[in-house]
Amino acid sequence: MDRQSVSSSNLASIGYDPSTETLEIEFVKTGKVYEYYNVPQFMFDRLMEASSHGVFFNAEIRNVYACNPV
Image (cartoon, rainbow, N blue to C red):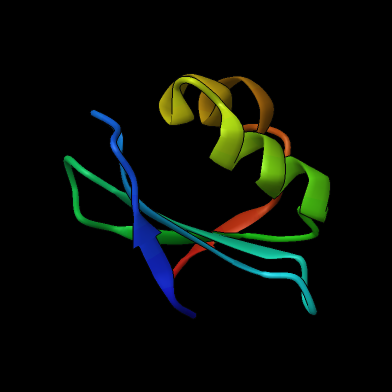
């Protein structure tokens, strides 16, 4: 999955596959990548449009969607 770099102190890059509704997040501090499952397109759009990607991620995605490390 292709990820794009974002300007965030917590998130290094974000990718999304709409066919599987899989969101991929790379974290700045650890460099680890996690996949979040069944994330609707509108949530990805909201994440990318958020004034703070990290704040939105922590509030709306982190503890809501199932995930696994890549």
